[in-house]
Amino acid sequence: MDQSIADTGPWWSRSPLVPLAALWATLWTLVASIECSSYIHNPQVPRWQPLTLILSTTCTIVVWLAFELRSARYLKFPLDPPRPWFLRELRRLPMLASGYIVVVFGLRHGIFAIGGGVYQHLPWRGQIPFELVKASLFYCLWLGLVYGTFSMQSSREQSAKLGLIQKALIESQLARLQAQLRPHFLFNTLNTVSSLMQVDIGRADRLLTRLADLLRASLGAGDTHTVSLKEELELLRLYAEIMQERFSGRVHMDWQIAEDAYGVPLPAMILQPLLENAFKYGIEQSTGVESIRVAAEHHRGLLQVQIHNTGSALREGWREGIGIANCRERLRLLYGDRASIEVANHGAGGVVASVYLPGANE
Amino acid sequence: MIRALIVDDEEPARAKLRRWLGPEPDIEIAGEFADGLSAAHSIMTGSPDVIFLDIQMPGLSGLQVAAQLEPGTAPLVVFVTAFDAHALAAFDLNAVDYLLKPYDEERFRRALDRVRERFQAPEYRQSAIRVAREQTGVSDRLLVPTGDELRMIDSAGIHSLEADDNYVKVHTAGHTYLLRRTLRDLLQQLGEQRFVRIHKSVAVNIAEIDALTPLFKGDYELRLRSGKVLRLSRRFTSELFSRTGR
Image 1 (tube, chains in turn cyan, orange):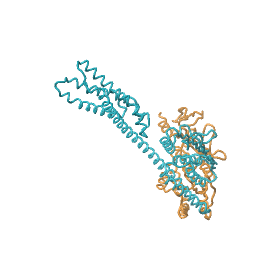
Image 2 (image 1 turned 120 degrees about the vertical axis):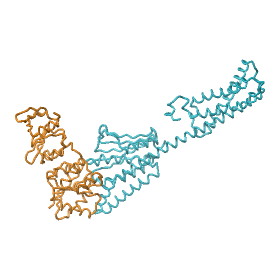
Image 3 (image 1 turned 60 degrees about the horizontal axis):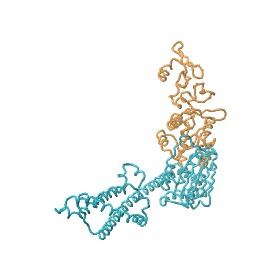
Image 4 (image 1 turned 90 degrees about the vertical axis):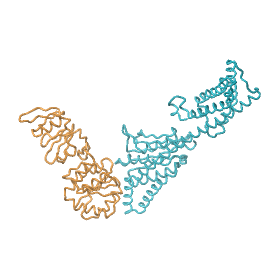
């Protein structure tokens, strides 16, 4: 059960089992009523006697259900796979069934004795197995209903979460496509190609191919949610090569990737916006020669990627843009609080963006 | 000869202009710059005839550079840009010259032909500067020469402006800068909210006014916070009083 929902409202409104329990209690009352219907219409039997029979059963069931609803016991163990869940719940059956017989028959005998009658039923030898079978049957049916309710709820929650993840991915794809196709980037790159091809056809051709690769990758990345760090880095390198061609001599790239980090899976396009920012604020806004360092490490099940640029500093009260906010949201949906993004001023100058996420061992 | 400046922060973009401008017999490339500030300095000191000015640049953008120029003496500006939706719309309205990246030789020649037609006509310079000022908004900062370089000063830090022949003296707390501008144009560029004229050739920062003492014939003696005493001419009293709420 979602904790945030569970915290609101009185206890009896928290559980999806409440309507189920009401239904169940009604059903028991009905069964008990049918059982006792012949007595109710028998003029030789006082009315209170069959009523005692009905109410003793119904009250026992209702009180038990009330306690049952207050505990979150059904959710302590995962619903999937179902077998262990049912086996665990069935372990309570002997205790519950015998408790039921003791309480119900105790009540009946007690009330009859007070009322001056005698509660007659089958000999215990026959009555007890009959009651045990009846109680077991009803408990198993109850478990089935509980299981059905919870699995339906959890699958609904799961699909809602999946929907959110997909929505965030689509938004980030859109944001990145817009960023990639950011007219400035595209047209300036095309202008560089147009300039280069007058003097160096080979270089112009290479640059054009890089641009095509980058565009293709951003269009195609929608098919995969997860890529390896190696694949993501290839995209970053394409982007960096294009920018280096445009800002020739103004940026020095430094890649420090640990060998064992290449295979780590990560959400597609999670690093690209960070590199774009490094260029946008560190290189494009600076008149000097700046550098960008991309570093990745993988140890103790944690992947750490850092993109550090010189040439810019975060001002007090800066607000992160849609690109970073989007990456953060995607990480949150996929990894909860096991992943994070931090953007901060670097001790030695410049700005560093760090991404931490669970590595391959997880 | 038409003396041209090339201003773009991306080398390949400069190379492209250089390649096509270079062989033109009537064009002389007077310089190439990769950022707004050094371009502005060169424009103010070298007075070229035409500048090919990229808009997106570190430091000062192309529009900010143009906004700092005086329409009367500014060179003809050809903005070169990849994409600036707002600016482009304004350029179109005001018939300002621009080149959209990437451009081919034919479009470049068309722009160059227009430069040849227009570089004698002052109205085109004026419209480029006006549009640049509209696009960048009232400038809170002013580009001033100090020795061999240009510096950006905060217009709030200016105490008074004083016209002197073809120049305007810009008085701040520690310095007086000499700008080759008209007072009228400078006031227009800085936005007339902050400054008020007290004399035909003098304007002061309203926030710097300390005291007013009446003199004969409706003139006043005006003292600035810095202690400097100026004369408020009768002609400008009503404007000053309405602006300061007296």
